[in-house]
Length: 382
Image (cartoon, rainbow, N blue to C red; front, side):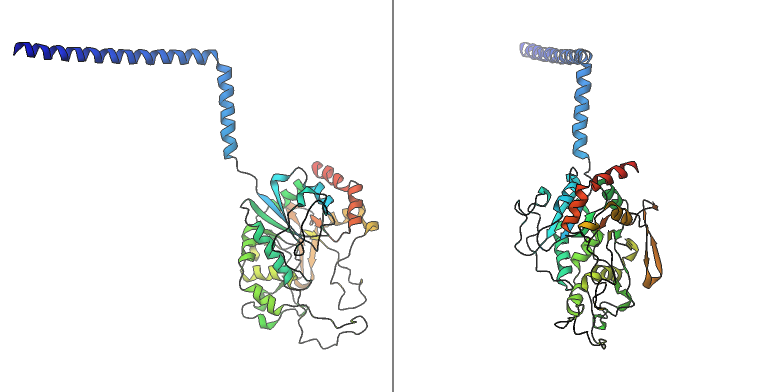
């Protein structure tokens, strides 16, 4: 019995002794490891600091939020005749824009019809045949917006025609558009032309009826309103139509009594009226960023005067013309007795970033004269 007890005590003693040795070895290893770390730190301070900087920079790059983008939405008949002017505008800014083009069905942008890589394969694949003065024009706008809204980084949507040119460089244009939380929508009360069709009421009441340029710049919120609209657009399809002119209309004037007809041009009313109906006019700057010159005396027929803006040809394309457009700092709306003084970032500014309508020779003359380069220099100074 005593021998068994002594054997048990010896086992306990040996276990405790082993446990103490284990703790001693572990402490020794920890001390040795700490000593090695101190030596390593002291001998490689520069390398360690550099490594930490690189690691922090790498982590920071993962958390940097990319700048929001602007979608440039071109409505074209076929190709874009001013593609190389826009190529110079976009160059070097690839992370801050996307391009979408609505052209005739089946038309593809390839190296045979554009020399700018920015437009290659940028046409939408569900385009429709567009007729001037018909609801198909606003449907083309909605198609472009649907494609552009797929990209969550796009926050502004700029509509442009195939005859538009930029007046400033990309950086100035980008900052101007992104400096405000509003859309730019030329919008005013339409009280003179009798385009409103009473059949649109009550879904589209007359007090929401607006007119303006189709060349708008929309925020993402307003772009979604346009795309999701299932009320106003069908009304425009049914009741907002261009008055048909008789054959040989230049020789046979339209009868004086046209009171029963409503000569409605959908793209001049749709976005403006929709935003007014949705109560969003407080979220828009009520002017366009695209300049057009309307010559009321250019047509021999009174019904067609002012229907289309002046087209600038080769001889018109001079620095003086461009400067005269850039110098405009206010717009007067006769039907509302309202003068819109243009501003950006809370300060007085020029009104327009784009201009139309320019022919291909006119645009290339501006490009060859390095007018766009001059814009860059002038903008950087300011």
